[in-house]
Length: 73
Image 1 (cartoon, rainbow, N blue to C red):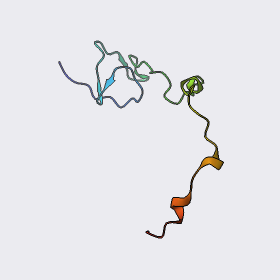
Image 2 (cartoon, helix red, strand yellow; image 1 turned 135 degrees about the horizontal axis):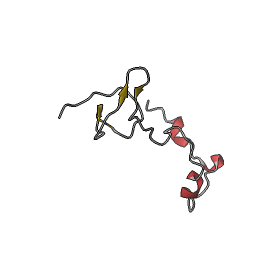
Image 3 (cartoon, rainbow, N blue to C red; image 1 turned 120 degrees about the vertical axis):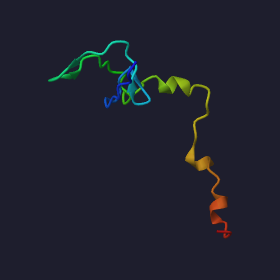
Image 4 (cartoon, one colour; image 1 turned 90 degrees about the vertical axis):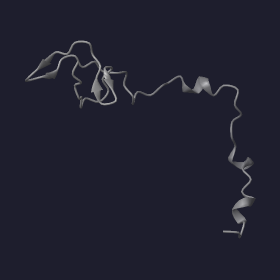
């Protein structure tokens, strides 16, 4: 079976630069009709704050910066 190199980014069939679709349909004017977009990688996940539950909130006043005064550099 021939391997088809794919230049589309974000396709569900893209594996290491090659198309892994069992059947490929290509239109000369429109390109690959088999292309199926992955979930948007730049989509902002609104639920990320739920994952931080249980962590203490960091206060800049609590930061110990005595190590910055070291003259060992």
